[in-house]
Image (cartoon, rainbow, N blue to C red):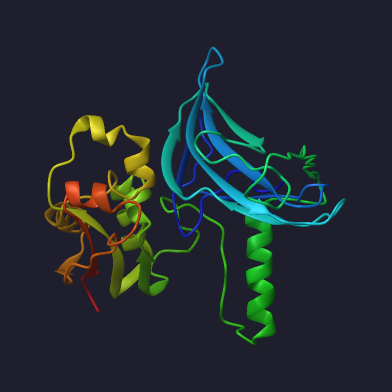
Length: 284
C-alpha cells in the first residue's frame, strides 16, 4: 500500500509539531486478494491520542473481483476530510477485509446469496519500489503533459498556506471547493494575494452556509468531511477576502451542489449551497 495519507487539490498540509490534513482524503492503494470470487478492502484513517486510544476519522470500502494469486493496484476513496493531528498524536491506517455492520457481510464467493463462505487471504505490498502516492501522481501528471506536448504546464507539490511560487507570479488563481477544508483560510487567501500580480484575479467555487453552524457541529467530523462545517456565510467569505486586500468581490448565484447526494440532509439543515466567488488584487 502506498500513499496512505495525502492531501490534494491545493489543500493544506503541514509537517510541524502539529500535523494538518485537509482536502480530499486519499485513495489508498493495496493489492487484490489471493482468492477467486470477490472480497472487500476497507481502509480507515485514525487519530491515535496519547495513551493509545484510536479515533476513526474517515473510511472507505471497495469490492474487487480477481483470480487466485492475482496482484494489482486498487484505489479506495476515503472521501473528503479536515483534521488537525495535534503534537503527540499519531496517524494510523487500518486495513481490513470486513466492516460489518457498517457494510454488509461479503461471502467472498462472488455471490450475494447462499450460506457458503470463503476466507479472504489478502496481502499488502509496500516498500521503496512503491513510493508516495503523491509523488507518483505528480510524476504521472508530468508524463501526461509531456506526452501531449504541453511544455508550459507545471505540477508542484506544496501547501495552500505556503504556495511554492514567487510573489506576483500568477495572472489568475482558480480553486474548486478546497478552501472550506483548510483550517487556516485567512492564511490561504494571504498566499493567493501574494502570488497574484497587481490586477490579477481570483475565482474559486466553494460552499456557503445560510444558517449558523453550532459549535458542537463544528466538532463533528462527518460535517467536516461532508463539506458542511468548514464553510462560511457569504458575508464571511467576502470579509475574509477584503481583509486579505482583495477588491471587486462578486458572488455568483447559488448552486444546489448537494441535491440528491448523501449529504443533502445536512446541507438543507444549514442551508448550504455552492457559490462562485470572484475578486481582484488592486493595481494594474
